[in-house]
Amino acid sequence: MKKQVLLLAILSATLISCDVNQKKEAKLPDVDVDIDAEEGQLPTYDVDWADVNVGTKTKTIKVPKVVVVMEEEEVEVPYIDLDMPNEGEKEEMSIVVETEVSGKEHDIEIQEIRADGKRLYVISKLEALDTDLGDKTMRIQDQIEINAPDLDIKHIIVGERPDRTFNGQYTYVGTMNDFNDRIKNAKVIYKR
Image (cartoon, helix red, strand yellow):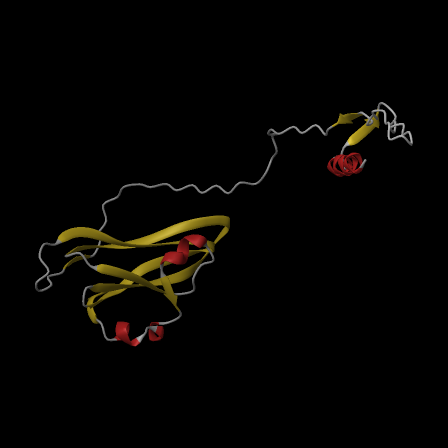
């Protein structure tokens, strides 16, 4: 008898969120004082589960689009040939600073490069211009060609950091006076 009650409790707990239609009535066993019992019958149920459909549907949403047009042009770019004592072979490479802006057009320009041991500090200036970009974003960049041994390069941008996730790779400072002492004492090897 306890097993039947426990089974009913478990079955009812699992079917709480279902649509259940009883098909037969429950019949309790006939009990004789002689302990002669007939077999009982549990009720049967017809259970309708919820239908779940997974798929796709077409909906019009706003998707950001960035159009970048790259054109090759011959331009004069600064070139640095850096000889460091006991550093072995040199290779030519581009030092590129790039940032993503919105709101207003901006200009970015590498102002100077300072050296301290095997590290180069590339200091750029970011300025907002007057042209409104509306709801568009724009990537801007500047670059310098360098012929040097393998060096660690750290970019520092003087200007307000644009609120774009792309810009997390550089250190932004308010003014040139905000550099720490290590950068202030590094040797200037290039100045625009």
